[in-house]
Length: 322
Image 1 (cartoon, rainbow, N blue to C red):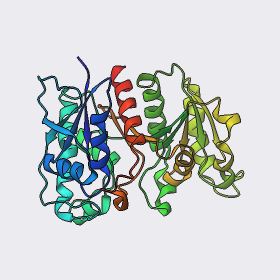
Image 2: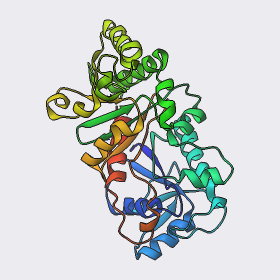
Image 3: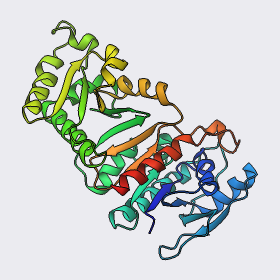
Image 4: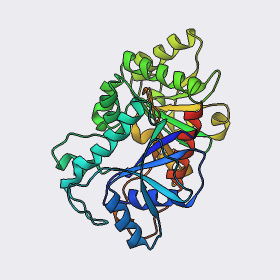
């Protein structure tokens, strides 16, 4: 039987509904199930001029080719493309909860997420900093790691959605050790690298320049790397982030660990925007995602590009197969 993979349609006013409708147009090596409001998908298909046959998801049924299986989660209020409504903030989390619960129970082999709008969820009265943190909380996972991939480049983050002034304090020996252990473990067990080679960026310009531009490299990052190398991990760094992302170094690496969100991700998104993938490491389930936002201005226009979604689904299928 094909693995069943849940796909959440994300923010109803964004491009997520547009993208998931395209799943019906291709053959897959898995069984994709879209978690969304069925009427929302029907209305968006009509707006886009697409003919898509929606059928209700039933675990024990084999869907006909060309049909799109939908696990219906009702909207709280009607949704219009491009128009945010805080009334539907909770709906977005309900779709995530359905996917998470199905993965934890073993019904779904993996989950793929379309983009959500953090602001509208917070406007709905729910404190929400991102998919990564929400998935960790819902699965009872103490520590997760965000990694984005595009082509042969994989970039993981030591910290995720933090204000820049808080980043240095968040990089402690314990937290950095845990992040690297998770990254190394999942590169081995989920991605199949027998001995992962990881490049580690410094935090400060020029990796601190021997303490003249900051001491985090000397006092935190380098000692952690030395300890983990003694355990057999292949770690290079701390390296200056402005010269780390060059072919000479990357061709000998399986992943890069950046210290903060905007240190590593601009490079990856420049190299693979529209086809990049977000993966949450450390979870007891498999979760991949698109690497872009809700693009409200494109919702319902027919101009949204689905490459990232299909890459995320293909990786989820690959990881589930392992």
